[in-house]
Structure formats: structure tokens, C-alpha cells
Length: 415
Ligand SMILES: *Cc1c(COP(=O)(O)O)cnc(C)c1O
Image 1: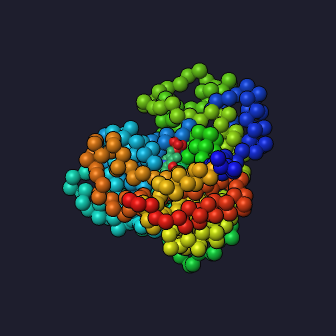
Image 2 (image 1 turned 45 degrees about the horizontal axis):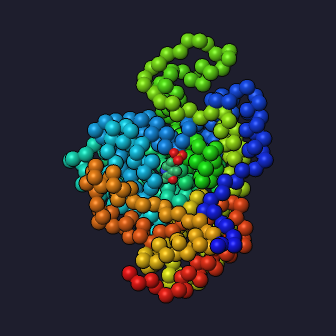
Image 3 (image 1 turned 135 degrees about the horizontal axis):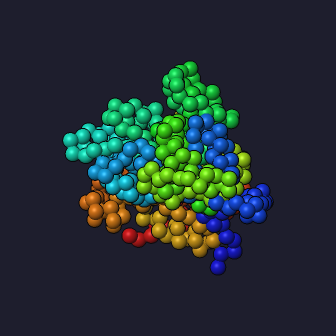
């Protein structure tokens, strides 16, 4: 029986979040209304985006982002196999096919060279409409290379930023770009470059506020974009295709007249949850700093295991959100026993992710199989995500590290 318990994740819910929910419940207005509007305005300001549109999940954010980018039946997206299948599911909702390119072996983000090769290979056979970079674990993809590739091939970009709040990447300056607040404490960019925050780079960026994410509303999501027409379409799509400023319909003083301009969805966020988000967003910088500090503690504590573990890297061009701390076993055969051993010591872990193309639905529907994306598959075989949440103590990290050391000092299990 484990004497301690360190769950894989625990949300950072404080008294302000609790008070905000109670106040909203007492206010007489519990679904989409003023709290959602407040969250959208503060979120847009936080990342430096022109628009932020709240929805009820990250999956809905990706789905509506893809629709707003014009994705339709018979078309395809190109994305990473190292993601949660919400990314690809959202494309399938649009009647589109999920295609993949392999990842970079260090960051597990889309490899721009593999993206380029895939687009050339599919040029004659598929109508690839949208590139969907997934900022794995919270580290922004190589957007300075992916954006030009997408433009050259006529693709829109919808980013899966479920892990990437707050996160920045150094990008070449171009005149009309939105300007994000710069990361605190990061080195100033060289001439001709600036720090761009995830949420201001692609055509649409989708965030998740699921319970385990860097900020949470229990369930929820957000789409950011620069386009006025895009934002208006998103607002319509999230609430039954209603035209105009749809949430007004819910206001007591709003007009009774409404028009359905298209078939939409029921993806709006309730005020009860937005109230949590408003409080969480105020703490986003502090929560990110706590994560980054725990990552440094893990690095120090695990450095001596470098012959058996690969620790996640952070590219110099990025400020990482550290949603995940995924280590990789150099000997994949040891992963299963390690996860079990940690569990017996009360330590929760996860595996992020089983490559999407290996799930039975994707294999049987699209004919994918092992061998199709070898870099992603080799990484997956050794991946284990360690607990990482802002309330963890220095002592918790030390306990996880010493447990890992003990388990890895055991002889290699027979295959
Ligand atoms: C969590 C997650 C999503 C989906 O977000 P929900 O809010 O759970 O719908 C999408 N993509 C990735 C990579 C995720 O981790």
C-alpha cells in the first residue's frame, strides 16, 4: 500500500474561483452572458489577439475553427499523429479526412520537412485544406517554417493549442502581425524577430480549458483569430447558427427576433464555467511560473538518469507552457513495469499520446498501420508523462524522482 499519493494532475482551484461560481449562481444568470463576455475580452488581451470566442470544449474550438477556416466534405487536414484524437475527430465532423506527417524526434511537434514531403505526395490525390499544428506538451511548433509552407500550398492554419497557454515562439517580424505581450524574463529577440504568443499566429487557434489543462473551466475552450468575419462566423456556429451577437438573445432586454443564418451547433460556454475561467486567467502567469519551476526541479533530480531516460527538451526559440512533462525510456520494454511501479508508490502517470493512426478506428477506416510514422511510433513506445501541476511541492518532485531511480535500478525485465 502506497504511503503517499501524488495524482497525475490536480486542478489549481482557489477560493476566488469558488466565490466567482457562487456569485454567478446567485446572480440569476447562469448560461452564456456577461461572464463569458468578460472571459473573452480578457483572453483576447492576454494573448494579444483581436478576437476570442468561448465554446464549451477544446474539441468544439478545433471543430468550429476548422469550419471557419472553410474545411468541408471531401477535403483533408494535415496534422500530427502525436495528439489526442479530438484533433482528428473535429476534422471528421466536417466530413474531412485526417492525414498525418511525422514529427520531430526531439520536440514531437510536426516536422516541417515531413509536412512538405506529405503535401507533395498528396498534391495529386487529396484536397488538403488546413494544416493543424499541435503544440505538444505546451511547446510551440516551428511556426516560422510551417506558416510559409502552408501559404505556399494554399492551406489555412488552425492550431491545436490545447496545451499551449501561455506559450511563445520567436518569429520573423512582418508588418501587420498582431503584437503579443512579451514573455516575462525571456531574452529579447534578435533584430528582425519578435516573441509571438500562441493564439496570434495561425488563422484560428483553439485552446482547451479541460480539467487537466494549464487553466481550466472544468470543460471549455476558446478560439482566437484576427478576422472579424471569422469571429462572427464562430459566434454564429457556436449557437445554432444564429446571426448577429447571439448571446444578446439570452438577455432579458434583448429583442425577441432572431434569425438562423446557417446550421450551427450547441457549443456555447455557460457563465458558471466562464466565471472560473476569468479567475484562472488572472493566475495564468503565476501558474505557468509554478510549472516551469517544477520542471527545473525534475531536471535536476533526474539528470543522473540520462543513460536510461530522455528528458523533454525546450527549444531556444520557445517559451514553453509545460502542460506536460513527458519523459522517454531508452528501453521501451521497461515502460509498462515502470508505470505499474510508480502506481504502486501512489504516483499517477499518463501516456501522451498513443499515435492517432494506431487506434483501431483510424487503422480500419483509413488503412493506417504501424510503420507509417516511425518517428512518432518510436517515441510513443517509451513515453511516460510524470505528474506536473502547480500545487506540487518540491518534496513531491523528489519523491517521484527517487521512485523512478529505484525502479530503474532494478534489472531489465525479461522480454
Ligand atoms: C485536451 C485536448 C483536446 C481537447 O480538448 P477538450 O477540451 O477535452 O475537448 C484537443 N487536443 C489536445 C492535444 C488535447 O490535449
